[in-house]
Length: 255
Image 1 (spheres, rainbow, N blue to C red):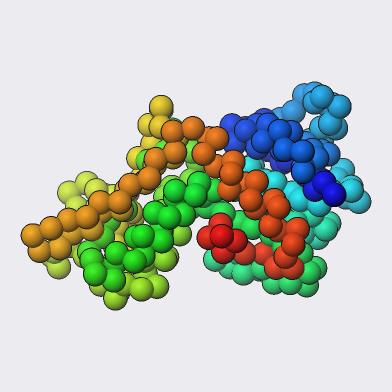
Image 2: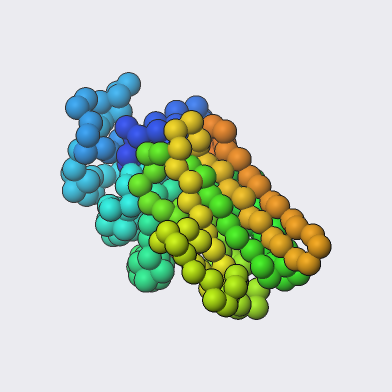
């Protein structure tokens, strides 16, 4: 039995890559496309919608969302309300929004996934960073992305910091009397550690987690050189959420 998939945000870079992945998998069937900026009415026989309310009552199993942070929560809420299991790569959710969507998924008995990163290597980086932070509590995160990314810091960097803070003893890093001669020079603060965001053309998605201790340092780094690196995770997400009855935050919850 094939899984019927809607791709929201198909005009974007990630959305168009997801569209190609779905079309290339015989276990998945692309049944609808959504993008407010679409001019075409169909793509290779698949209907195109510009308004999500036109998808109320539509026959589909999974809603893949690579839209924008401004509409991601609303879209995920809509998907759950209408019986579509969401697989969401759009970032920018607040903890309160995630908890609200998990609660709604439980009510609807629907699986779902919100993943700050779909690259398996990035998931491993987060896991390794959390493990290392038990022994190296002094840590800074540098995330590097293309200059079209709208939110900073990245969802992956925030998720990494959250995982580290669960096992690292909370501490404020740097000199006690530290000052910034230029505001923001030390980056954003999360539980005493620092997160720095780099935005440059030519980059895709990259992250370094740098640990320091007396006389030694440890650097963990992951690089996505192409958006195809995310598609194995998206594919896994689509095939897993239809078996589940609750939304989860983080691809590692499905591995």
